[in-house]
Image (cartoon, rainbow, N blue to C red; front, side):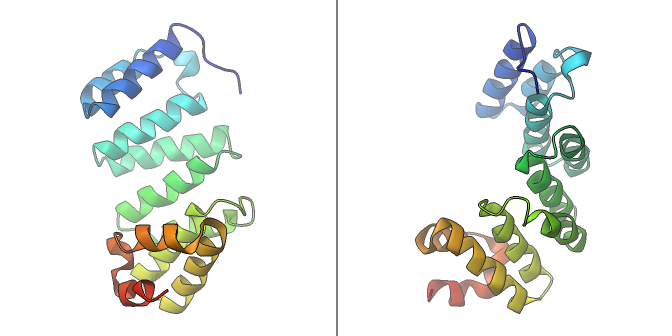
Length: 165
């Protein structure tokens, strides 16, 4: 995919800056200044997802993630964001169904099995959650995953097990 040039790259950088400052409204306003020709650029879609997620506008976040998957299916973030948006919309089964097929496509990305573990846990399938959590640990390491997992309410039913890893 082409890299963005001025002025669009400046608008993306400004939007990112506003988002880092916690001002999603200004970030969104700056993002609308990106030219129509570049609105579906992966960098613009990724930032659009972040802005929507910051505002907890999960339907719009889902739309941005789906566009990102369509324009750049090799970008793992599109897949992760798509499933996470579904999960936040209380469509956890769909989130799991969307994300599980891409596990093989991105075997070194620990976020995929980790999120799958969260979704399985929330769906009450602790056996499957354990398997996916073990895969995330294999990729990223026990201490890193344990630290994140013990702060993740999606995995609360497994916290005692996770403490004992």
